[in-house]
Image 1 (cartoon, one colour):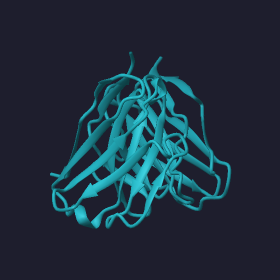
Image 2: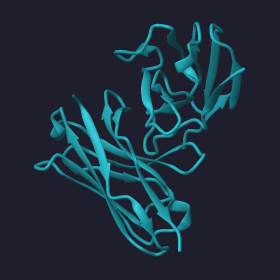
Image 3: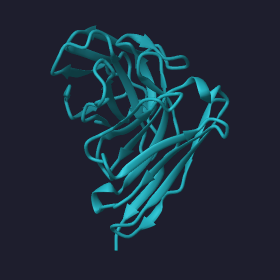
Image 4: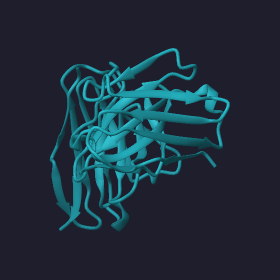
Length: 118
Length: 108
């Protein structure tokens, strides 16, 4: 079964840092580009970062540029998102997803909640 | 950046109804438009890719159409499990990968 499982979310104070992980299984991780998407409480979906299969191409949304770093370890079938200088506006459920075909996302992980609050 | 606008933002319907949701792009995007369903508290699920291709395992009552700037998602006969929020997403010009703001489908 193709599966993505996120971890690493939690309650963090403003200005703090957090590293999210996404464990992939059931497919050849090294062949796929991956993304992170977040969803603030009661809001819509916001794409925040993309990494190619070899890590050679990386993109960020303007909202997180300079504060987030996406990476992957193909030997461990894992995707990461390092988030620094966290703000209240970063409070959201963070999803990882596999990029398939010409750019649709399937599957998605179950999400991990990040709450930025003092 | 490409903007996607969904209409309506919310929709009330009954079991058995035929429902159509529209997604309009600010630029022509060919068929690089995809649809997702999100149940409350769950991750999004891919329904339609490439504007009109049904993802495996998705019931045939779901269909998508359109190209260029105007796209539609149609549910031919609503079932109780279809009440959810639906999002369109474009992959024609990236980054960013933009999403529509969502359409919440609720029971009348």
